[in-house]
Image 1 (cartoon, rainbow, N blue to C red):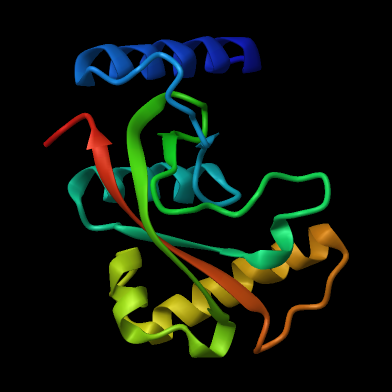
Image 2 (cartoon, rainbow, N blue to C red):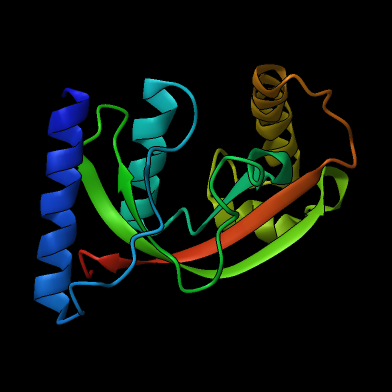
Length: 159
């Protein structure tokens, strides 16, 4: 799917959401995104959201600010896509907490719904992923790096 097709597809999906849920046309859209930095994981994580297993996601605080977008806030609406850009669902952010990497707890790890849902698994996969993010941003990862812990719910399609 080309970037233009992706944008058109997401715009159409967003318009359907607004129409079918009776929301105003000027309802703000926070983001259109896929999870992770590779196709296999992006598509698998989107499927976990649809199944209701994945109800949270994490990012690094250093990814926001300056010229980039702001961090998510409760009430934000986003279109989740596959790696190829096909819309999968719309989520609403319900809570956001910023905590050090080493302070992320078992409850949040379980809400992310990845792997076996354990904190050990969460730390293992996120240490690797955040390491790649830090490398891309020219930063050094650390145990205390601020992590944006976002919880969400699927609002479209309704289950």
